[in-house]
Length: 421
View 1 (cartoon, rainbow, N blue to C red):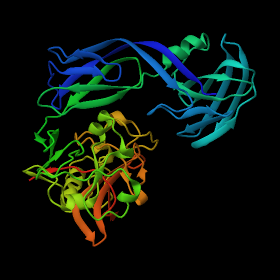
View 2 (cartoon, rainbow, N blue to C red):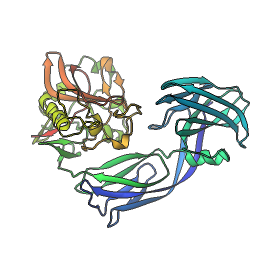
View 3 (cartoon, helix red, strand yellow):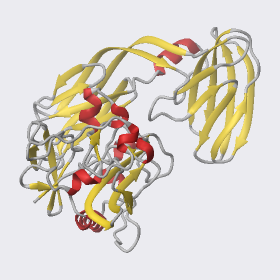
View 4 (cartoon, one colour):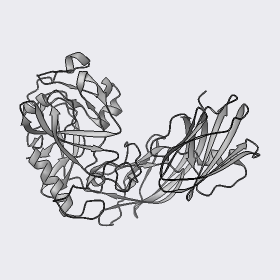
């Protein structure tokens, strides 16, 4: 069986919106995106979102960006960031203790066999380090599945109410204001206050031949688009061939594009953009007038500027070392979780200090296979490495650096960013 929840949750989320200099921004549109709860900032930049949201979740799948603590087929899986004592207590719906277990474990991912219990609804409280979690589970003679929700110091009584209180809302706060880059950040707590949102000035906008509008940010002496390209035509007006068939994509030597998993979902297409093979890039006709697909050297210029100006997550500024700029250019949303300090997927609200907003749009590679949306982002350069490979850049949820590589086959499908001439 699959455990699930279906409840209503009251939300109260408040904070302040400023520019990067700390000046309040009045009239910014703030919305709890999935719930569709909107508000507008006041003269002092403050906002409060209130309302009720419905939460429906399949509990055998971990919600994005939460601690990985779950029960699957009678086994509790937990990721521990440092050596600590783990306490697991099993309760009935009425709060009666059925079993208790305590173990000291090293950092890493562990699997613990849980005791057999009778049919019905049960709760499992897991304590590790300074965190507590509650798992709600339906079972038939054996634990089936359950997802943990962080509770941070929960009471030992009224577990049913406690579980209801701490179900995460798994939503995004989106903020828009003319003249500033769009801002998105994950929010999981339904009762959150003191959120500080800094909006970065939009340096320019560009419109492709399909009419899609892209924002841009200035980083050093360069101006980059902050969204992946999604045009379906060359700037000459000629259509780019749309290819869904795996066999037709594999080994293609002419221009082509697709969307990840051939999706038709408009929101996904806008968010992640299109995937192009390099033959499309090599035409020189993808970008609107005044813009171009960046060369390998222009990506290197971006990397060096960010390192020298303190954008490495640890503050180091040595360009002779591997860059550590991934968090500064990765978006605050849509990356899978990671656990090492400095990794993109760890502490995602700290991402995107540059406004570059890189998303993990995945790729299309051998035999037309789609790979790793949510985990990886790949971006073409306009620079060949040799006759069958091209330089590109990529990010991964578990990395703290932007990788430069040159083994990208020309028939691969990657995302595209633009830089201003």
